[in-house]
Length: 332
Image (cartoon, rainbow, N blue to C red; front, top):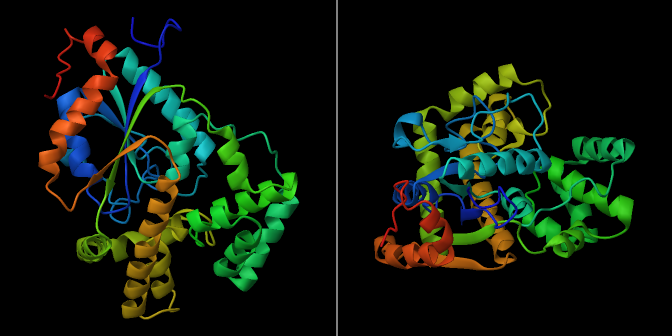
């Protein structure tokens, strides 16, 4: 019986985090092959169908036969929240473990991953639809940056972690403060209890200038691959304004160009700037998390694989013994 099914042990969960363009995908495929794992995407935009290039979604032919979960599961005009992710990911983890494989979360959306790893309770604060509507109207008339400024006044930690264009989460953080009188970040910190999983979190980082160069090269590649055409299709598909898909990096900036609000050059420069800032926010979020094994990808990551395999083997030894006759290798 796999761990967790009889209440006698936690399900092991491997997690790989890091900022955009740092190299998570390549390493995740290597580790998944070594450890007989199935990958669960921890990216808030890869859940949407028809958003492929701008989200750097791994192509089916690039997956090396490794099963991937929570990719292309909702249409771009449908809402999808961190609570939805938490529920869907929990189910996927249980199913993967029941098949005798290792559940493996890979992604860069801090709230999604942390809520799963530490079992956040999202429904405790309730909601105020009228308050949300007022914040949406304020953002529409004054801009996303102005609304983000409101959040910075009452909850600077959440404001540091959330991009101004992430209106849905900015409004939710404001709503929680409105309902409870306490910052959302304080309530999150209070929820960080023992993980319901036997948890290993690996983190990738990179020297800032090198990361920024990789970000710019990735964006140039996306544009060459047809990002503009993808945004055009999405604009026809999704009613506007829409708080999620067309506010995502790459989509928001090129949508502004296609509406005639920016020149192409200005849109691309804005996209690169915003993506650099997004990577900085991702790192800020992850550095608030505990028990992360950090690895610098400026150095030869291949030389660090033995250390990574040692961490996994040491933590998941009981699970490895259970799976010893199911082709789960020790990666040593």
